[in-house]
Image (cartoon, rainbow, N blue to C red):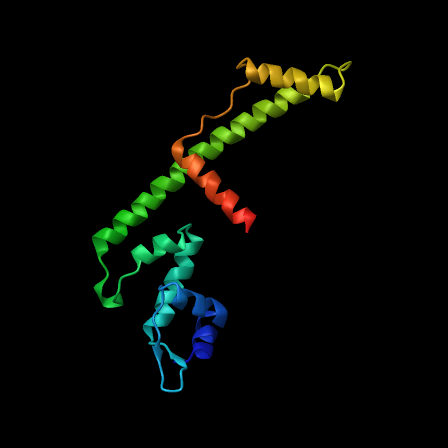
Length: 157
C-alpha cells in the first residue's frame, strides 16, 4: 500500500509515517519509481507506536519493544517491559505527590504572611524558613535529575 492509503487507514500524517520510517520504527519497500510501499503489518505497527506513545513510552523504548517481525513477538520481554513502565509511572506518581505536598506547604507558608508585612519581607521570611529546614522540599533522586535534563532539552528546541 502507498503512504497516502496508510495515512488514511491510521489517521496519521504522511510526514509522521516518513519520520517513523526514517528513525527505523517502520519498514517500507521501494518500488522502481521510488515510491514507498508498505505491507499490511504497517497499520498494526503504527497503531502500536501510537498506543505506546500514549502510554508514555519514548521512541527509543518503542524501538526496543517492536519485534523485527510482527510474527515473532517475545511475550516475556514485552510483559517485562510493560511491568517496568508501570513501576516507572508509580515512582513518578510518588515524586509528584511529594512535589505537590511541598508546594502546598510552601503556599501555606506564603499565605501565613502577617498583615503588617510587605511582600518583599514575606519572601525573605519564607526563604529563611526554607533555609532553616522548617519548610521541607522533596529530595531529588538521580532519575529526577535525568528527567529534568530531558525536559530542559525539549523546551530548548
